[in-house]
Length: 370
Image (cartoon, rainbow, N blue to C red):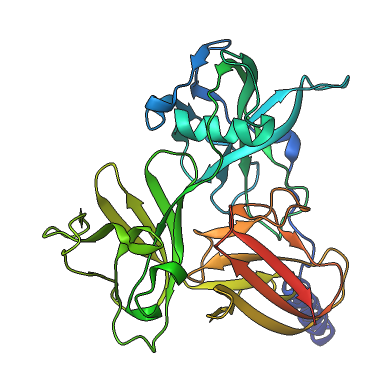
């Protein structure tokens, strides 16, 4: 009897072990009813009237601050916050606001916006043909988002909308440019990559790739697609520009891709190394596939074979094998990318060429089935 009792205990213990080791394939479910939305700490007072002027394009219009979003689930990635604005809705419905326009995405819970940046964003929607002293109403809000593809029922969370009145100014929507000629491309300004100042605040950004075949990693910035304008070289202090045409060359430390920023207000420049890759659902969002530079087309690309056909197949672009810098979509139909945007759908499986282009108004992409 004691032997039978011991055998039963053995099988009971074995059952407990196998039960405890059984894999739980169910995705964690977020209780969205328990989400605590971000709330404004500091924002313009409702119905404040801002009069924008071109002379004050680089002046901060408003400071914004909000609380963290709180999701009822542990071990989620850090959220990203997107500053947005919207015009009043022109049709009847449940919301007083129409489609939102995203300004920028960041991990912090505070930011600011200049007069020029907001004016440019508004003019991209309403155009430049409007009477002087036109007053429009917009509503500011912040969207919180987590990039957690293994969590079901994740929804965005939003602050309340702060309505303000704006008097915009007319201005050209053509972005100012700088050129980046260097040893890596034959010192030819006309064919050099560009930096763009999209909001007229004197700060230019762009993407530069230097091949390992370059004899050196030296370059300059020019105001024209020739050497006839202002040529910015290296000043004595690191990161400072000298507009004297005889100044020395600027230099990057090694081959690779770089996000470049030039501030002509302070005559400074900086860079961040960015090696881009494609990551997707078929890769379990765990490891990306590195992209290569296409010198002929001046963009990054990679061909990925045998992507399985499955419902809701998606991908994104990210830099440096991490999620700190990633690009997704805001509008699935415009082909542009925004920092921390939504996952990009792929219609079906197969072999695709993925293209990441930094030479457009916003970073853009193509996913071309081969």
